[in-house]
Image (cartoon, rainbow, N blue to C red):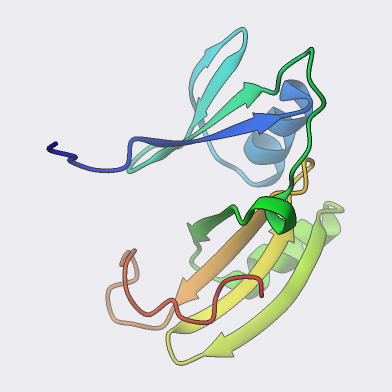
Length: 137
């Protein structure tokens, strides 16, 4: 097997329109591709893909239930949290500061946790290493 990179993270959501509004309008991820039952958000790196959960089976399982957390790098976590609070987004954990940077955790409409991380290392686009302590626990 020759995996080159993570292509996308797929979230099963209860209401596709509500999730599009959250990730596109509130969070600010651009829509890259949109079809009737599938939406890809993002520009570079892995895409966040939203897909409706089964219409015949009960949707269950939030991040707390199944351990899924989505992580976004942000330029300024404080202004991001202030903006999201004004928009009514639920804050799971307010800003904490560690050696690697600042972090806060918010909740999406389906109960998935989203980690917002402002790195303190020189490469502000670094996506690996230095994240110990930035999961919601």
